[in-house]
Image (cartoon, rainbow, N blue to C red; front, top):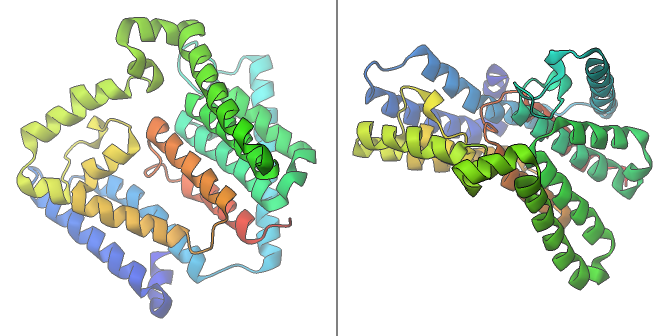
Length: 327
């Protein structure tokens, strides 16, 4: 894909320049480490950069309309097959379909990690609504995605589902906004109360470790106990601008923080700018903007958004749904 961008240099030169800037930032940060340029750091660099190359490639080489429709149909049927696999796994007690290790509720099937499941299912919800409009609610495959989202069992996905549900209501019943906004806020607070105070597993964590540990699944403790000590003990002034991490497993899994943890302040801003610029090459309506803001809120809670390399593929389906919408 990178070679394809180089072949299409005239339309990709800005992205190539930004990628070169990120590579330079990575090199500066790595020179401060001992040992420098470890294999794991190159791997993390590749994971970060892959979405940028992926989005840039598909923007430079758009597929034909018939190919896109086939692509989207495969996406829809993936979640049908995944739900069938999950249900079979529940009945046969296959541990491989579980979202989490241990006894915590959650079944994600083929999606392997909880973060991938959260973003994949939320992408599918956005895909159906933006591609088919309100008619998506009449499609049985949309409700397959809803069922799969409930079974996935991740807090960030539940948060996204509640907010996305109110987004749909608000989009179609704008004149009732004075009622819908406070009702949505109350429902969200009620859902958080039930999750953190009534569900035994999370209630126990809240009582023993605190509210934020229960809400963020101990990510606040990873930040305080791992990430910040590494920064204060190892970083020079240049690292705050250009990053430089010898062990990225020390990240907090709060993704915006981890982004600057790897790239530094200067590199992190370049990365965010490049990511947004390569993906959002189309105009957004206000419901679409609200949807992506909800996704951003999920990123703050779920983590691993930028380095899980299947997530750009799911986001591409949302983009295709918006640009080829039927309603």
